[in-house]
Image: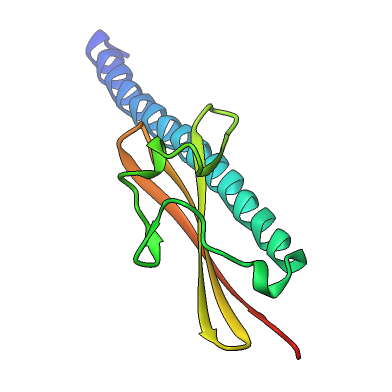
Length: 134
């Protein structure tokens, strides 16, 4: 085996290892996003369970809602908006909208929102309905 063959083999090996390193970085970022998504889903589900126990007439929308959807510009600055920190210290906000669908039915929309890197918004949206049995 000549020195040239060894150099070519090492070059091929280096390119392959760089590809594997790139995949590892992508996997790590994916795991971080999955953690935030899981926390956001749990946080929204927690509010859904709370609404199950809340009397029909006491269901109202939260701060941070404009025209039935989250107002992303005001959410981080509104101290009345519920929030919690994920393991990676990402603040996850929770807002909800309660809409009277009929006299005995309300549609409840819940959003768990967070900003990736403090810039780009992500959100999870859950919808349920609650009826008032007379």
